[in-house]
Length: 549
Image 1 (spheres, rainbow, N blue to C red):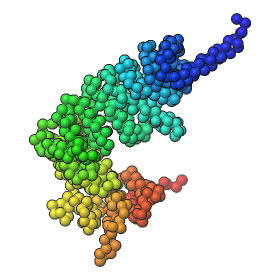
Image 2: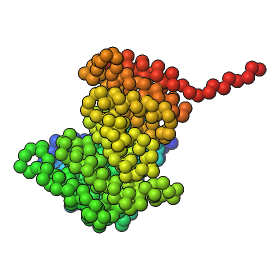
Image 3: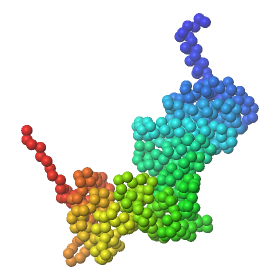
Image 4: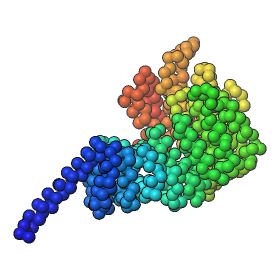
């Protein structure tokens, strides 16, 4: 009574320190004698006494893993003693709430996630089941807040960004494990919508989609959650886009489960997608060619395609776009043939008119081509593998045959005479044919009539790689002397640059200069200097000189 205000504060500080020391000693006892049954009763009584403090953890203990959280974390990894965590039904929800607490430190969130992982790894799934809904809710809240705050880039310096990225991957891995637990349909849909953003390209969210491990976690979670959502057909496009992306076998297997989980909307192709990703049971790391090629043959004809819905068509297209990058020639050829059949089918169903219409729908057949197939073909045209680029260009010309109005400028590259067919000879195996094709391309481009989109995204990548690829083995010498693929490609690049608007011209010039100055074009510096000069020579913009004051 005679302590006064200062004495009371000092007493509280001492009591707080004593509690912390006591909890640390409890953690040490648990770690040292975790197999002793005598500790069970003591731990249960201790947790009952600490119950009020545990309930306030999301409010009071969010800056660092204090003794209480460390003790609970130690208990979660202590075999039979972990059973004491399930006695109080409010204990684990209070701990999980630390995950989404606004002011929680990264170390607190990491300790919370580790506690849940320890319980799952120790086989407490049944006891943990009533609390998984709470855990899912707090995972969702934290991920949503993370995205709303600006993602990894808003986390501070590089070290802090890496720490948050590691925490994010830990969350995704845990989510993949617990997502099979039945949850509220609305909650499942919100989680899938949130996770889909992490698969998008870009570094805002840490570039998580570029990590094979993170992609596997996200797609596994989505495959589990999609069975609970009220409208699984909303995620058909997500599945199709992810099918087109190269991935390891476990990730492809998760995608197959996602397609199967969508259910009725993809009933006609779910089994085929599984077949197209199958592996031999008799031989290690070898495709099951019989199943894969048979699946392609089932749909590479007009009749079976006519029976499929738009959703089923786009999923098949995504799988075929993945397989045109395959190293196996048989699989690649079957994928190209299926895409050709899809072009014909889309055109026969009025797809081209839909693409050219001002009010085209994102859910129409035309959008399968413009929204998925065409962007992936353009992406393949920028691949370093020559055979993939050439295959993509051939596929583009096949699309030009199916959609002559949409690709009217590309049709100018085709000719009935194979010797004069620019498109066919641009990707010909014989070097002299490629050189002549580049010469004809210069004339065709200089005459005009090609859209900026065609010049920048379809012709420019082919010309670019013809310039910068190692040319010594491609060098040809004839009586005219020293002409080779690279020289003609430089001239073609100048012709393209002369037709580009300022924005495209500037990007082309700066791209060439960046390649030269950063030393990325080792072995092709001379060709890059020629390329820069050709682009500068093609400068065709009027310079407006301001009047003298």
